[in-house]
Length: 260
Image 1 (cartoon, rainbow, N blue to C red):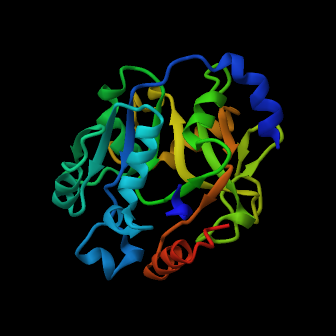
Image 2: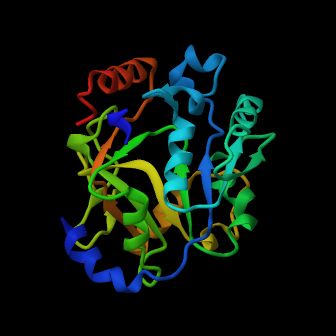
């Protein structure tokens, strides 16, 4: 489907020469959630296996990793985990490791469980349920190019709130002129939303305060230390949060209009 095929020019281009530190050849794909807002569709099929543009949202994420040269993906599972495990057995272009969580660990706890697989290197982490399209260059390649471990501990892929499909209009973060992300003390509407893709340093997860925690706690700490950065996405995205969103996303793909 054709639908699924600022600063950043100034500041990150200047950093390109500093971004040679290798990322892990293993990525994290977060797929353990319940998909509550997608009911009744998710009562019998997990959200990552719902199809957008003729392909499951999980496969969209895995395809992006393959295109970026990632050799292996750790997929955390909990809800309807057997279906996800069975589905990924059909993939032969990327090694898959299933990290099953008997008790759901939230986004941060899920990464902690997978930490040994990243060989101590920064790694891509993708949500399995937020498809995006690329434009001038693949988003993962742009993130890799922009990554500068000297000043960043996390780099998030961001979409202007006004252009993001399926999101509320309050936004997640303001993206500053030097690439810093801020949300605390910033009243909505904020300029950008996060679209489920990031690069993270493994040491952020080495000594968790609790086994179950959200990545939001990591972001809060990094924001306070000015180590949380964003890169604006050149493409489109669709936050498929409800059955109605899924219908609209597919209708726009089928019409050829795309997500704008």
